[in-house]
Structure formats: C-alpha cells, structure tokens
Image (tube, rainbow, N blue to C red):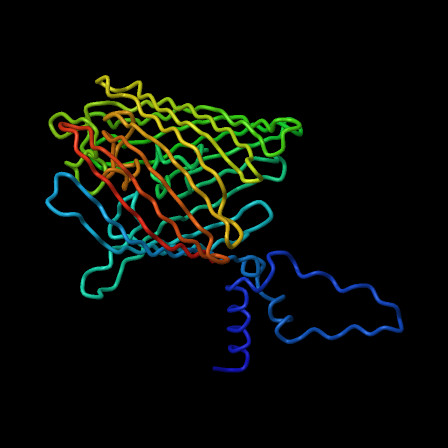
Length: 395
C-alpha cells in the first residue's frame, strides 16, 4: 500500500468510528503578529479534505444476549433457547436539510417483528437483513417538520413504550411526516402522518396503510417533573379484507379471524392514548393507557387495550427501572402479524400481565428480566408464560 493510500485509510477509519466531530472543524483563534500559528498535522489536513458527508458520518448499534423460556400449556415440555440480536446503524448528513440512514439487523427470516437469531445449526453463520433505509428531509423554512421516505422507524407516539399496535421491531415502509411545535413554555403539540406499502401484488390490488396521529403534552406548572400527554390516531388498511395472511405463511393469521383462508375483517383502527409523568422521591414515574377499536371488524372481537405504570430509569451505572402492564387484545382489534411477537406466543387473541426489571450495570451495558404471564384466548383458553433474561450493550 502506498503512503497516500495508508493516509486515506487512516482518515476513513477515524471518521467511521466517530472520532471526527459532525460539526465543521473550528477555525483557528485570532493571533497577534508576534504569535505564530502551529501548522496543521498531516492527519488533520487529510480529514479536512474528506467530503462533508463522510466527516459527518455516525455509526451506532447494539447487541443483546438473551435466554428465553416459554411455557406453553399445549406443549408437553417448556422450551429454552438462547438468542442474540445485533443491529448496526450508519447515518450521515447529506446537506443542511437532508440526512440519510441505513441499518442492518439480525434475524432468522423476513418477519417484520423478529430480529432475534437463535443459537443453533451447528455453529452455522447467521443472517443479516436490511432493517432501515431512509432519508429525512427537515426544511429550514418549516421548523419542527421532518419528512421521511424509505424503510423508516415507527414514528408514532406510544405511551409507556407500548407495543400494543406495533411490535417494537416493526419498521414501516413508505413516506411519513412528523411535526412538533411548542405553543408556549408548558404546552407542545405533535403529529405524524404516513402512507405505507404493506403488500405488493402483481395480479391484484396492493395492500396499503394510511396512518395519522396527533397529541398534546402539557408540563404542569409549578409541579417539577409532572406532565400529561394525550392524543389519538386512525389507521386504515386498504385491500386487506379477503386477502391471504401477510408474512411468509399465507395460512397463519396470527390470531385474526379468517374465512376460506382469507382475512374476515377489514382493519380501520381508532387509537386513543394517555400518559402522566411525575416524580416520587426524585425518581421518574409514569402511568399510561393505550386503546384500540377496529371499526372494520366483522365480529365483536374488535377491541384491544394496554394499561400500565413504570418507576425509575436506567441511565447512570447503578440506576434501575421497573415497569408493569396488563393487556387484552381481541382477535380483530389489529393486524396480528404486526403485533408483539413474544407475548403469549404473539399475535392477537391474547391477554395477561408483563413485568419488567432493568439494571444499569455500566455505561452502555444493562441487565434486564421480563416475565409475561399470558393467555391465548382463541378457540380454547390456554396459558402461555414467557421468561426473558438478557444483557444489552449499546455503542
């Protein structure tokens, strides 16, 4: 390798691991005629010669090691497995108004709700999938507006990190916009609107999703740490009723009712949510609720809800957080293939409790335990409990 190639390689490495600030290098301080300016080092000169998008590149990601035990009443034995999740995200500033992001994630298949990789297969190599790929346009002329296009993160507000409507791994595909504005020192309004491509069909009409949501956050005056957030939304799936099941298995409706191997119901979902934040002994606390009603359901199994509370927050080493929620998802309250994939085996037609405890071991490292006491409420009511113990590492 030539000397020039080695210099460029060094510069690229430094930029990639984030040693280069996203901002432009500061200008040299002014000096009097009696002072001399130190010459720039060779590496600094090379870094400044890189394109702006490369200097602005940021790399982040996380890794999770999990032990999962599932106790399904319909099975003769409990199932134990070790699972890993790896995600890597690269983002860069294209210009002052556009950012671009690409993310990879582990997973065993194309499922929209699963980035877990089981440790099996005789030490076989594991798959990586395109998990994110989008641009974010934030025009300087409209403060608070962001427009996204591609495979994007779920942009809708979820009280208490609720996974009632979408599993936390679901990344929608299409075009969406978010807007937020402070009305005054105590009040903020926010909204999200998106049009998404759910399923493309070469010989039939495609399935799409239109989703809109709005809300308001009020910081209660003279009460430190207290806030109230409330809002609602509407999510309309087009051309899903009468179609085969979404996902890899066209016969698996994930709890939704079906007729002749097709969705029985349409899905026009109203959503309402609320969250109250406050402090107890200096610790952040929340109580929250999330409710779904599917106006397109053909049966009376059209409602789902989740209520819960949390205390604490994992931030500094030694800090901890505890959360609890109870949920009840009737068969056609939402599209089952996109709902939480772990609780009671995943999908709709489930109910039960979830308890979570997390402890911050060190910077970027936490340990957590989740226990889900669930029931599958379909043709018969059966118990389905899940225990998760995991280490999470962020970088």
